[in-house]
Length: 244
Image (cartoon, rainbow, N blue to C red; front, top):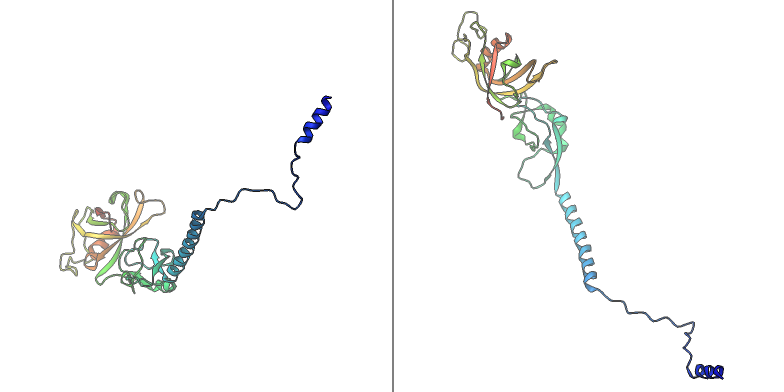
């Protein structure tokens, strides 16, 4: 009896529809995000614009010569002293083009060239590289005759430190080319405020110990007494300024 009732109850319900093989299952509609699409377009345009700007800038620049290592006044310029830097074509700086660097070995510095400076014609000249009336005197001395930490480009006073009076090279004590007596006494100034062109360290020494040769850029009128005293290692230096 119960079996019949269950069968009758089941027959009263309608069976669930069976999907046909060709029908698709329902799905939720995809949410559109116009803001993200617009942002993507803007990023693409910005990238293209940036690339165009870089290309235009590269086309408006020229390779120029820049100093990478200090060159003292009066010395020559070699490949190790320079490096390439990009400069605008319409720059007001009268730079020297990089493709002309091979000609620099014929020129000398007219002033101290420091790293990071763009090389311009006013900084160099053909020939000896010294101004009229200038010369370089090499003074060899011990560390005790010079201030510690002396560097290229510093300005110094040079004193005679010998025990006996010195002359500028004249045996008769006549005046030198500057019109002053060639005889100097201990403690007398030989050259005042002159520039240290370059310091050449000895084989066994450094700037603070051992033998060092200091090249001084001086007027020719100061050269006589200075050379005479330097030949006997009777020159002492005091620091005036550490800059060039």
